[in-house]
Amino acid sequence: MIYTVTFNPSLDYIVTVEDFKLGLTNRTNSEVLLPGGKGINVSIVLGNLGLESTALGFIAGFTGDELVKRLQKTGVKNGFIRVEEGFTRINVKLKSMEGMEINGMGPVIGQEKIQMLMERLDTLRSGDVLFLSGSIPASVPDQIYQKIMELLEGRGVRIAVDATKDLLMKTLPFRPFLIKPNNHELGEIFGKELRTREAVVPYAKKLREKGAQNVLVSMAGEGAVLAAADQTVYDTPAPEGKLVNGVGAGDSMAAGFMAGYLQRQDYEYAFRMGVAAGSASAFSENLATKEEIGAVFQKLLESDSVNCVREETVYADL
Image (tube, rainbow, N blue to C red; front, top):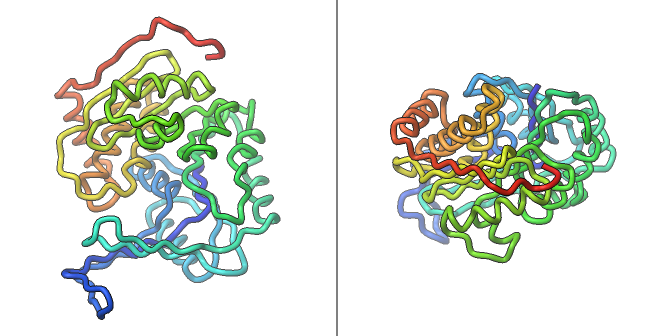
């Protein structure tokens, strides 16, 4: 079974407003309400690719009920724990002004609720897959990902981590199956500016040396890099297409990679699937469908753009 964890999910209220004016009443030209959160995005894309998953995390209030209802319509199973006070946050995104967002706080999560989540995760066994995605709210201990991986250590659970800086680095001693920083996040870890795939490669390898089994680096229009567990490095430029919506592209890449790996246990195939899923979501108004992902995957095959280099150095502990 596949599980995703989203500690602070949301309802995303996405609107467009023509000629937005500060200090005046503005009316929307279009609006849509979608379930949001990095782990939730992963679950939806996995479902689009035919893989069932259970979404874990915390919900509260009427917005939490609406979130679950909308998720269940997509086929994602509900594993959320209800918090009695507060409500699941609403994030307002103004599409007609790039980067214009107002993100809610979400409910306060008490220690007893965190313990309930740990008890649910304690049921995972060999062959299960777990995604730990995104930031954590202030009410949750900042070592929570580390504690989850410590709980599951040695059980044969494949764990994917998509987080930033310290939250990510603390998980590496537990050898996550997959981590997915983007090039800016990778550069922030090492204090470097990484603009090209060539520049990314040595730092992706360093994270693998520190414990990650597979390091998948998304680079938006520059493409992607994979430092794989079999000591092979893959890279590819971004597929051709028009950027429509970058939200969820990285989550889609992580979902596509894992779906590809589970299907064939082949890193090159998984890499292509990850790039195809991430790009297809970037080219779409919403998270990519199976058909959209398949179309980009076919373009990748036809372009033969994936480079593959087998490393001469085999690192210890890998």
